[in-house]
Amino acid sequence: MFKDFDGISIEVLMDRFSKLPSSWSGNVKRLRYEKDQKTAIIARLLLAYALINSDYKISIDSLPDYSFGEFRKPKFDKESLSFNYSHCKAASICAISKKNVGADIEGLDIDIETLSLAVKSVATSEEWEALNDENGSKVDLLRLWTAKEAYGKWLGVGLRYDYKNKPFIDVLKKDCNKNLRIIKLEDEKNLYSVHNQGIVFSIYGEGSLNIEEISWDELIKKI
Image (cartoon, rainbow, N blue to C red; front, top):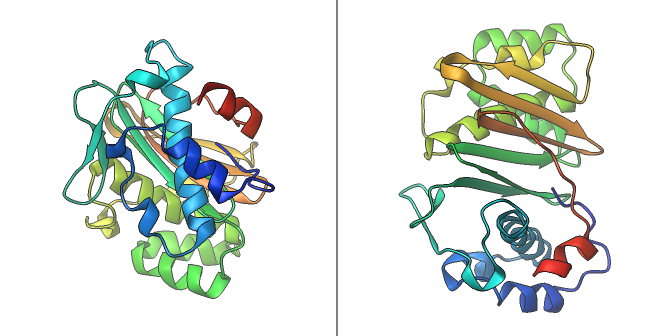
């Protein structure tokens, strides 16, 4: 995860970006706003960082190519690893796993009315009722929204699935840890819902979750 974009110029980021495989570029350079370009580049730099600083023994000069599926989910062409990245105005994340994984992140700076309409369109009646009964906060709305998105990205189809029949109501239940919620699901899958200093993100997949927040200094030491 990366959150501190202050003082990093787009020129410096583009220079670092140029060191990555050309297949990683996607639509980054076509993004309209510079801030969106920055967060998209950082998401890819996080992927490079994860590969380099791991047991996979992949160097900056041997980063693998990846391609995009029908609904734009990226996947390595040859490596038997799964990854998924996401970015918003406030932060970028990249999840990497030996198993299939989906990730989505949103910032609390989002307009509440826009968010409520979006969540209502994907929520089951039980989920929407729970949000209203608990006086659902923006954090709760984002927990549900990112959960639905992360699952769709795990599937590789985004929100092109029957999300009304895939409830994540447990993510709305209050527990002793207000920041991290771990929801055990069928077939050994887990949903991790994280609230961290102005952002909410969800990771859907198998295994345990190890969250690492990376600084710019740490990032550029390797890339």
